[in-house]
Length: 229
Length: 107
Image (spheres, each protein chain N blue to C red):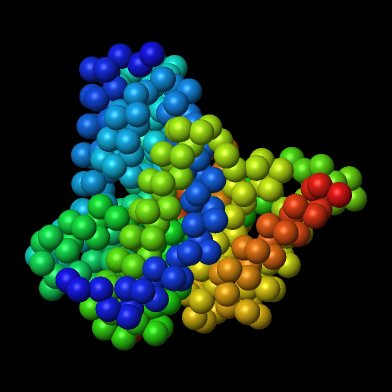
């Protein structure tokens, strides 16, 4: 697949979003160094797993010598949300080659999926969407690995007084708005906002996936077909 | 020091499991025809999950500015939503939000 204009559009749309990913990558890199992982271990884990929140949680659990099963299970619970992105992307990839599917799946992140869905209106065909998605994903991949390596080598370089951690939720705020196409979507977003606060205290960040599933259920309820009788 | 065998067991388990989660529905897509109703429900996914990243962070952060009683992130989010609505620009929202939060917490 040769990159076309949609690829570059996707790449560019992702540049501001990396403001949130870069300090997060620096934190994970710093943690890997503090947990005394070798550089090879840190970088191999980073490329194999490529899921920031799970990397952070599992490095922390491994330094506390948690049971391997606990490390794996809690990381996978954090990553369960990727199931939703995989589902949402599946209609676009129905007729793609296996290699494209594998690459798309490996590159799934919150940010790439959110960026693509925010621009869904101008992406007319599945091919355009996939190009755009790969653009966002490659941008994310570069920013993430580079910031993680820099964090490993130099420690946490992001100035803490800037509260750059807030760039991740802020980018999601910007990316969710274009997807709120009518009152049903707005209602689902409000439902998700309220439920996420109520469920925030659940362990293993379960609140996130449970909120998402309940909110989709709420969307299904709002758009249910009226009983024909 | 994390023992090497333990480390690689965890990393392989996590990596294989995570890839299978990511690939699951994409992999099934060729074999299963996706009904229109299911696609409609998939379109709710951004609205269903993205606010759940933002809103709890806004509510549960302990802030410093007294007159906002630790609600400065809430304040920033509300105004950032207005900026997002006007400009439709991710860059503008992030730049505005971070600048305002910095201003509220540092001065």
